[in-house]
Image (cartoon, rainbow, N blue to C red):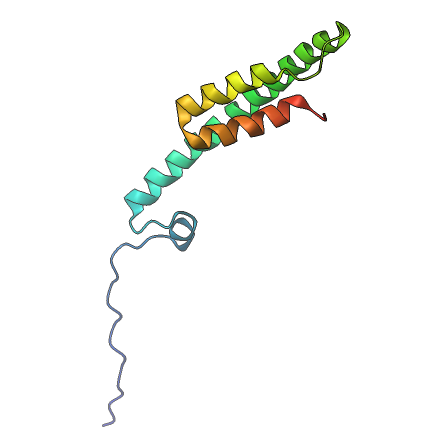
Length: 111
């Protein structure tokens, strides 16, 4: 009688993360993947709102610039820009100044 060897049954692995969830989030547990994915959705929503607000600010700034130029003034009011820089710096620290500079650049258009 010939006996044939059979391979041992594979051990059942514990529930694992989907490769996609772990790869996308860097999380090591399904719970952390859920938290991160939900938080990222919220960030995406906030980013869309921030972009919309920046676009609205750009439009308002264009109205101000047009009124200033039409009245014979300069396109840019440096003292006002310094106020804005100070406001962002006070609220957000040094990175706030960088953010404000970028925002001012966006709202000035081509100078």
